[in-house]
Length: 64
Image (cartoon, rainbow, N blue to C red; front, side):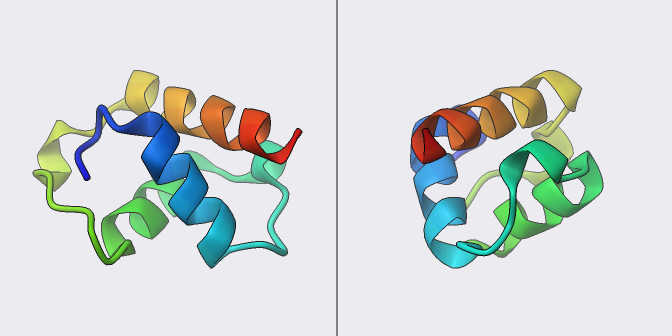
């Protein structure tokens, strides 16, 4: 997975953190949890607020 795979990341985060409300996640935790995903292979330096926001929005949609 790479930063642009927002839906795949959101699904993986939802599976890894089923007890977390994605509307309440801060970007520091979101970034760290994404980097910790087993199949995530992108450069940590390539993350940014827009990417993290897109991941969070996809996670919220996944929960709906």
